Amino acid sequence: GEANAGIRKPDDMCELAKNCLTNPDQPPISMHCFGYGESHNDDLLRKIASITAGGSYYFVQNDSSVSSAFGDALGGILSVVAQNAVLNIQVPEASREAGVKILDIYHDNKIRLDDWNFKVSIGDFYAEENRDILFQITLSNSDLTTPHINVSVSYTDTIEKMLVTSTVEPCHISRPEGNTLSTPSEHVEIQWLRIHTVQEMTRAKDMASKGQFKEARSLIENPLGLVQKHDNVDHPMIRQLKMDLQEAKNGLKSSSHYTQRGSASINTSMLSHKVQRCSRPMDQRSFDAYRGKKKSAMGLKFMNFTSSRKTG
Image 1 (cartoon, one colour):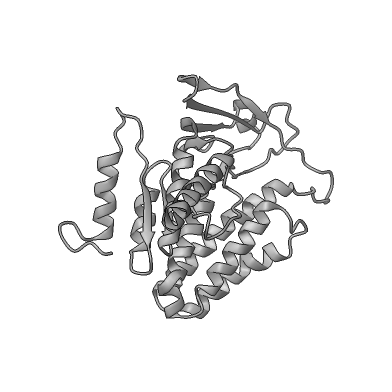
Image 2: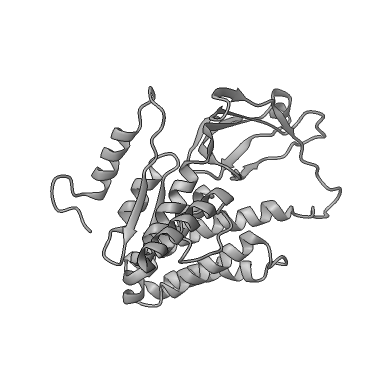
């Protein structure tokens, strides 16, 4: 539904939630939002979920999806293995003198300290989860014996109940001789497609909010075409991106399509790919590249429990 009393403006509601849920002296609190049917404010719920570390937004299309949505969310919450993870990215002094500097970090929670030092707040990790942080740097103007970049991560180990700081990992980037091009890393290439997909979905949402559905669909067609042409069509992330982009394109056919489910499904996919975490009920789509075993088991357990109560 819509807020009809008290604070009503979306930005004010998000600011209130942020102030209430973030306290540097207390463990972080995550907000998991569930939108039921066609009449909820999916943009607001996604924004509220996004302001909290580890938050998620679920689009629950019908009553039968309620149990699997809660099961999926609870399966993740009960499998947290690390909290407050922070990635440190630094250019060594010798590399700075050779012209290396960080141009950009493709993450919403980046903190720029200077041209050579960034911190990225990654949040918490569920069991089996990964995070991919892509960044852009200038290469050295001479042969380097030192790393281009040093990275380390610090986090709270929830199993051992202790603070952990990793060893520094050096990152060397080799340059091909002459004018030849390096063979791209498939993993990095796919992760860039993930980031590009979120960017184009965000732009498409903005177009759709203005009633420009043809233009919004054309924005989705760009990453969809790249995904469809990818050599490894069986890669789980390529499958995921293809399904989400096709679903987004279908949801932008008209105003009625967008209002009924297009907007909510795009918001689900945007946040899921941005944080690299499953936020979709199992009965709406059994496959999700981000869904781990804990989420699958709990989602299935909740689905089976609900089914047995209906038939019992």
